[in-house]
Amino acid sequence: MIHSQEATTTMVETFSAAGNDETPAANGGVSAQAYLAALGPIMAKVSEQADGPVQQAADLIVTSLRAGGVIQAFGSGHSEALTMEIAGRAGGLVPSNRIALRDVVLVGGESPDVLSSKHLERDPSIAHRLYDLANVSAADIFVIASNSGVNGSIVELAKIVKEHGHQLIVITSFTQTAGVDSRHPSGTKLVDHADVALDNGAPYGDAVLPLPGGGTVCAVSSITGALVAQLIGAEVVRRLTEAGETPPVYLSANVPGGDEHNSTLEARYAGRIRRTA
Image 1 (cartoon, rainbow, N blue to C red):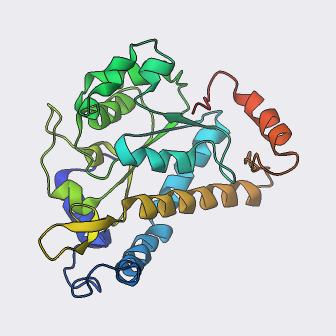
Image 2 (cartoon, helix red, strand yellow):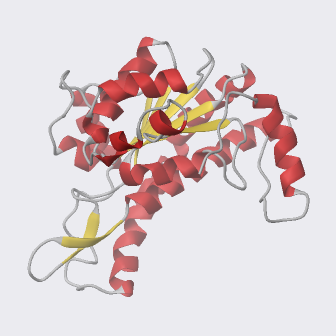
């Protein structure tokens, strides 16, 4: 199901966790306690998706894994942190691959100079290279994270994913994406291409504590995005275990036997998942 702008607006009204100006931080200044006071309600609101889109996302991922697929996760800028929650971490699913802008250098042989542009994530053309370098299989499912959901590489990869028939899970800020224009030539946003879209609850601009002279500090999207990723992971594992299947899950590499356990599982997906720095 592709989400229209009208549907996006509805989702913002339904799930957005930060659209209300009456937050605990509004009059609390800047401090650790003010940040906790602002973050708590946002985390609670994001968690309300556990009985809705989180379940839908888990269903799609389980279907992919059972068909031999892997989870292809992409995010640029700080949203790459969310992909690290999905791919290659202790307690996470082994059949997962992290796609990053630097893949064009590490895997694709491009000059490191291409990474010097601070606007690289706005370039739609790089998405085609990233998809080609990911060694994607037909059964793979994609998770794309972007707080704004409007930059060229993000939107173009989403378009490519859908053109190739993959399921797409999107994690974004419904408030932020509704408040900015697309930077993609099509005029579409990441959420417009989603099969399942989840709100990370971040307010417009991401940060939650107002400064006396204007502006805000202390962003939330990395924290809430990690929460969404872990909620989905928990539901995927629940489905597998309840069906009598052993979920392919990483152990920490820093516990005895971790390396051996992980290497055995990774060998099942040789050539399809990358574990780069």
